[in-house]
Image (cartoon, rainbow, N blue to C red; front, side, top):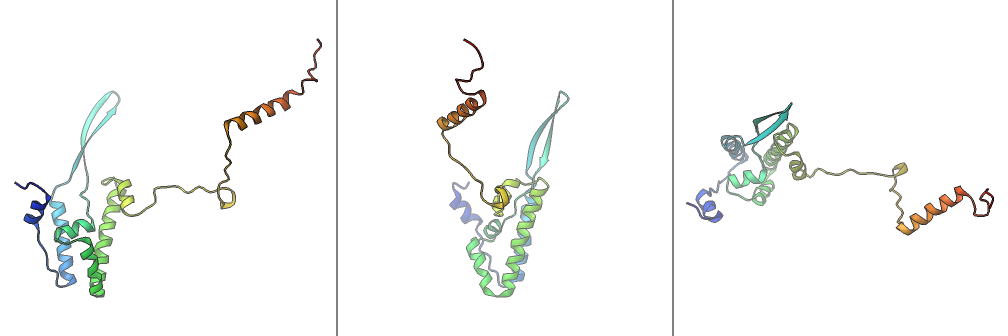
Amino acid sequence: MERNFYERHNRHQRQVALLNPAALYIQFDDYLKHKQGLGQPVEECITHFQGKAASYDRKLKALITLKGFAQHIGWTKRRLDAQKDNGPDWAEALEFITEACEVDQLEGAAVGLLNAALIGKMQGLADKQEITGAGGGPIQTQDTTLRSRIASRVAGLASRVGTPDDSGGTD
């Protein structure tokens, strides 16, 4: 039984020698088969409708990443990225594999098989809204204190009521 990550790493370590980009494609295909062979993760969901509760299993998708592929072949992502410098064929192969991972992630998030917020962050997509003021400029803000807000309200009420001399009544 492995006691820690280091023992697991050494037991499963397989430094793959990639002689050409075609070997990279073959290893990526092996990685995809490995991920599919793990079986689909399942999440138990419970729904409640018209006073009755029902339980069902929702299938999730195994996450395919470039870092996961690098670990699968016993490399680091940095070493995998450095292969781009070995020529245009290597660069094209790595670009294809990177895009395949990204497309798989986005498609999984789009249909609800993967966590969309997590995939958005992994892809570097913004999780924010930009709000602008009139004419696309910055929003105008004004710092006020509670005392100044109360004073302006009192002044507004006093102007609508009238002056103390003009009460309109008799003593």
